[in-house]
Length: 448
Image 1 (cartoon, rainbow, N blue to C red):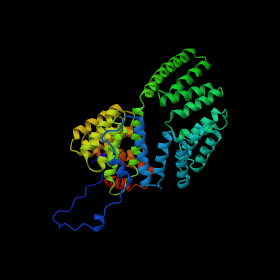
Image 2: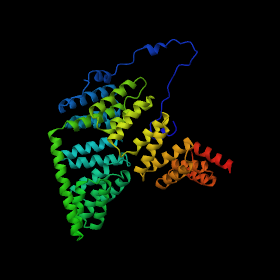
Image 3: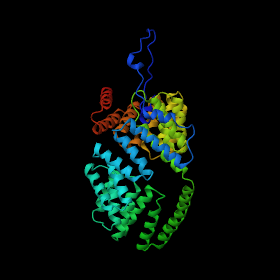
Image 4: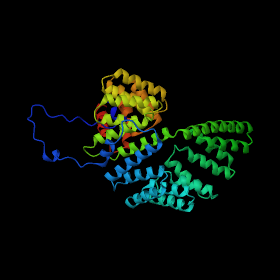
């Protein structure tokens, strides 16, 4: 299917009986009924239409995770799921016990330390919260979020020492998290390093344009820098967004159902990941279909259901799922790539090319869409000059080994063997154990 493998999950081949052979008796072990799982009884008990009442939705969530935990009582993932549901329902003692049980099985589980710390913090047990986050960092120094929670609590207590170092490390672990830079801005402001604070608040807003408190912090910072007009503009934006946010909070308070359904759908997606054994395909499908029923407006539900259909060679259903996901989230370039890949595999190359060209125009700073259109032209042997230009752009945006390999192929297809050799040698330097790169390098050298 050409470009499908880049963005869509790996396809599982159809298993067809060989023609012209006598049918063989079914082995007796296949005739033995599989162990009845609690999740099957739970799924069979569900109504066709999810409940609208928040309490009923919560009851369904709890029944779901209890069935999962009964099927997999010693799996860390099922305990995390059970703890998360209790925590979201406000059942703090039960949640804490399940998180501690998780740590008895996996003492390096960062999520357990994070959530135990948050629950302790929510009950004003601040020293206990700090201890949990420090233990989590010690258990897994690469764990994300723990340093932010630790730094935030220390700042709230008025202890600034060491918080900048914590946040600078957190920025390397979660570079797209606006809250890291907002908190850095708060610290710099408290230390009267106003220009550094301004840079941090600006970065927070660059990453998250609706970060309400960053506008407030930036406004105060501009005031201290003597830039009154900018300070006033930031404060006006803060007030405008604050009013809109309060209206949205009031709307949610009046009708919690959409939020409850969104949360429940997330629990179904998590449960789906636990049922991957042979013979559990029907369970997996039902879990994802229930997630879609719970919240048909969340692109993640359609994306996962589409990927599931793709794995089982149901390409029209996969295409419909990815189309729906793109309709809900048109700013995700992977949806364009997956839809193009499926169209290409279903013998609709014109549609695939049109989608990839649209993606290149829409996401001009995204390396992957350029690489995928280059790969498409290489696979179809059409517009080869464009394939080289697109691959060059992909490498300029992201000089990864995979993109350099595409550039090498594009150069070779256009007769530029020196460029092909240079690109693939860079790729091998980045990924020296990739046999595909070595084979292509040998081909290029044999042609020179």
